[in-house]
Image (cartoon, rainbow, N blue to C red):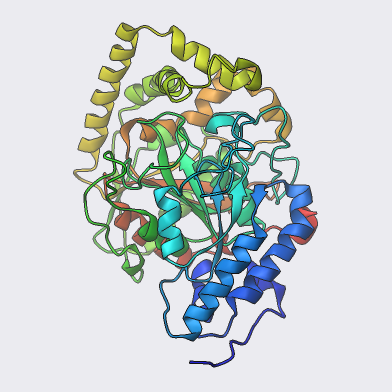
Length: 480
């Protein structure tokens, strides 16, 4: 077939549309992958100098992938909704012949020798990979001192979230249509809440970790940051599944997440622990949650009072840091402490703490973690999802975050609703659900039983069909 592919790119706002909408235009040959990618690279060049979301841009590789996609589509070989779509990778996903630095200086000039499994699967789906996205050092809590952190496109004075900071900034600013991300303590959910995006932290092991750079093996979840639940479903459906190169990847078949029902939530039960959601949670966040709960109820869902194991969750917040430290020390054994001088102070301190913990103390942590997982599993016997905030306070300014290390109570508050579910491995979906008095986005979290991502996507898509929050974009002025 030799029909000419036309373009609808006179309106630059196409770069701000949902992935699935643009995919429909590519499939019908109304939009050219080459022109789309070219315009995407132009926007990156124009805007990322102020936003700092990319660690490494690969324009030549992206344009060649776009040309290949366009030729295949013209020939009638349409691979998937990702065919010809420009996306980007968190800088811990290895892409062959491209450096994956994981926010560190040690790996900055070392091209990867192979693709991570998620990268290979995205390539096989026809995605156009734009490059590597900036992140905190080693996926922990602070950017390396030599790196300029990404800036929030909504307002540069506000936090972007960590560690998938570049993934969120690029997706929110229209510098890619979606991005891979990872979550060890909240690193998909905080950035999504901070930038008005949708993120899926899938069940631990649902996505292969082969070829990704570890922070903490039993806590790391590879997932997605996108603009809508439908977009996130497309990405996860492509990335998920068993992998002979990662024996910890789950063997369960991958559902067709994109075929979730959205018309009604009748029969779905959403658990709400009013005590957990209300204690030490600011009024703006409580109003956002109440409004979201009412929306879900109006859509047909049943709201069910539940009792979350709050004391165990509070202990898990304390236990998360030493578990992460020990696993991180193992992950960095080849370069730490032998190359300590190349590490930033925050990650170095974590690795030192990991080396110092005794085996007996580590086992006590693991026993408490096992008990927590069992209690959370039991909670989902009677509900399809749990509704919580992402964080118990409105969006944080950079000024507040700059003193985070001096505020252990703020660190614990930030982690209250996030790291608990990295400890248990349960899937979480983050949705934009409001804005604070300063006009910044706010997000909620839905949690489900292991491998129940389909329920999360059903709830998320229905919520987004009934609310406008995921359609809001940062203004050009805010991105400048």
